[in-house]
Image (cartoon, rainbow, N blue to C red; front, side, top):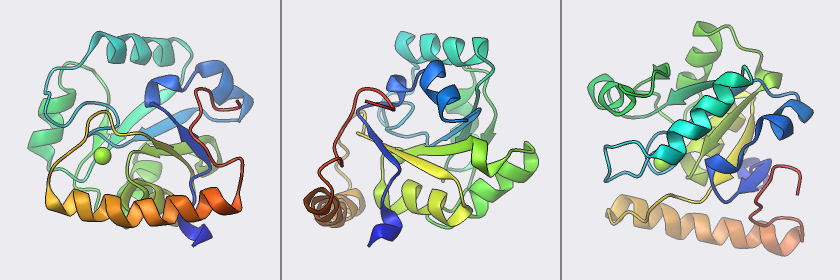
Amino acid sequence: MAFFKPDWLLTSIYALRPIDLKRNGINTILTDLDNTLIAWHEPESSGQLRAWLAEMAQSQIQVIVVSNNNAKRVARAVADLDIPFIHSARKPLPSGIKRALRQFDLSPRQTIMVGDQLLTDVQAGHLAGVRTVMVKPLVETDSWVTLFSRFMEGFIMKHYARKDAQFKWRERLDD
Ligand SMILES: [Mg+2]
């Protein structure tokens, strides 16, 4: 079970700050798209997202989307954000993240995978050998696939919380 355990739990990807990332030796953020970076039902990017991306760019922290969605969907979603992406990543398999590591010549030790799904994003990150951050989904989805996965996730999360008093949602990486 410890296999799925994320290295950090954060309320939102926007809670990632350059100073905290640098303290942890991180220079690259691989991020899930839907419900991590943008709300799944809202194609428009928010002012908060733009501000956060600008802050990262200013601090030379790379942000790269790693999504299971197809090229067309991801390209459309990130078109106005000017960030690179990996599409059809096949998370929970590690292949998409490994592709990102190769393609952008990244060091796994300086890279994190951020996502809102334990069984998909976090597992893929672990399998690819990078540290992982689990965030709360930006909005709740209603597809039954997601509901089932959330149900399983709930069990596992409770298990971790019982075993580890430090396992809780935080506002900063090193809170
Ligand atoms: Mg997601």
